[in-house]
Length: 306
Image (tube, rainbow, N blue to C red; front, side):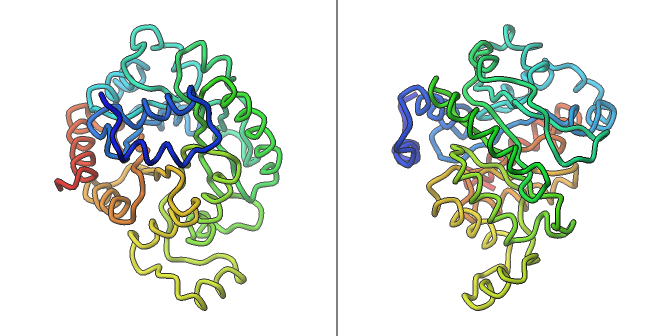
């Protein structure tokens, strides 16, 4: 498929990257039903690490099988599939070359409350498995956030040197951040900006609420009359905070919820200028036919058809 003007424009924003990295970004952006539009939907399956197997897969037992997720992402026409090392290895040969893959190289678990992540994969693993990118989570606000930032700084340098793209999950938590603050407008925008400053090509954040956590930030938001009235305007501000739209930003789907809520989120992301969704449990915890139908509707929303 010939690279579209939209994708060429996006690639032009990454001024320091080599041909290999831009080629992998191009592949992600040009794959699937949204290929060439500048929009994307990615399937992430790291929830087994984060929440445990039963909490993740028991609602749809077919999803215990790694091949299920590769095939779901391919059949749905998604842009990429992201998962940790073991699951990637379990399907790397069968599905080689059929969809861009993102190796999640650090992970947490629900047995530990330290707001930290362990390194569970390497750039070498990503190359060996034919991945287009590495994915890494940081927790701005946690006691370990500076260690995590230093880890991704080092891994990102290595990844870019061998032509891989870098995806950063930026999830504020811990420290003095309240539970409501984890999705507060000022905190989510700050988290997206930090990921951009750390050199991410693709940034993953949660959809923000209209709550403002920091007293100092709240004063600025109110003085400058920054519009927080709708989810679309809040997404627009996240994009503004991500180098004024010069970085790709996708928004997480979160815990399983009703289909209408998922579709409303996608419309807000689209209308706010976001690049798309990275949606896991809301799809793979449903029966396959329902998941495919949901993903198709989300794609049609990003195409402006719903």
